[in-house]
Image (cartoon, rainbow, N blue to C red; front, side):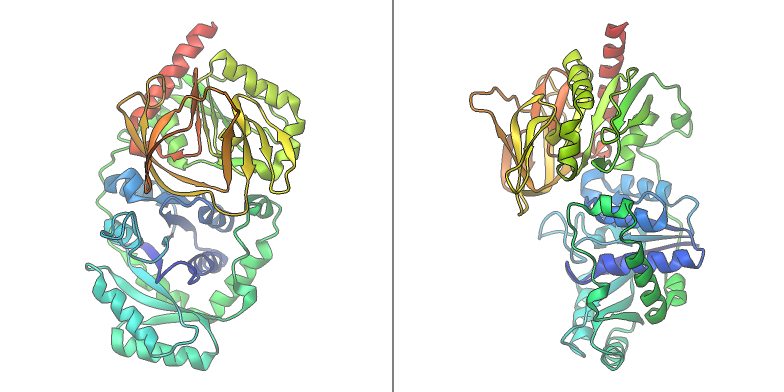
Length: 462
């Protein structure tokens, strides 16, 4: 038997991430190897998982990658772990649209045959909590809800009333609770999240959560409930065991540091399997684009948090600019796109000069500028996604881009979201840039196209 468990919630804000992190940290203290996963496209929660477990957390998204790929991503990520803990997204049945479960936590649970523990915020209720749990049981389609954890209990007596009601009416165990305590609330998901984790500032918080989870939640019962049958997985992305040992034909430089850190792990692994050697460099540390690179990948992150430092390093900016002007096949996503504009303007109006390959500026704002799934269609001249090809991804950012007056900005994609279809991104030569984070598993042909473009660039340089 394998061990895997989904931590689902009745909605956003009920404490899924807090409890997921706490359970991970408590199990780690027992010497149990934990692998984290996140339902949906979010990349902030996996950052917490990775910090706690020491293993790269992965996204499971049935809309972006398809159902068979979800199984494969899960199987690959779970290797050499004792238990996989899968954090849900929003409420258990919330997904791509309100009429189906596609992309929801419930959908991922069904695909993986995973037991589900439901998190319920019991503040200001007692017996009514049982009605909520029963509603989730009856609404689902054979979902394996095996237990409940109560959050924000006013007291132990309050928790016991809720536990009795749920266990009598719903026939499943309540594993425990966390008390209502401001010190147990997750720090605000501010844009300095990654730097604060790297500095170790959240370590005491993780320790506190582990202590509280150990004291108030039956971890032995959770481990028992997590037992599940092995998954029948047919590889669709990595179809050959020899792929990762295949000879490398090109080198793709990948910006990787606290400013540029968000990459779906599968994107890099698919590049490696396709014949690319991913070589990492840190713009923040003053490292220029490696001279032997045949491609360039600048992913998402928080360049605005380090705008002053990035702006001051003329050598790094010049190396990025000159290589892009030279024609190196480049993909810049979200934070990478921001870095390639002429300047980043912070919320106080301070201006920081960036690489200057994209004619315009990015302005930070305090409210969310865009959030949601995207279907990207390629346009003529897009080396990664040729005209007629489609891929799926996600957009999440607090900034807006404004092109210079009179500048000619050619879009890299036609992007379809909840509000319709629009021209999106920026395309010039072999540079593709935009806010959308593309998942290569949605169209693995992108990998072939990129490596082909890198090979041509490599030959032209000789």
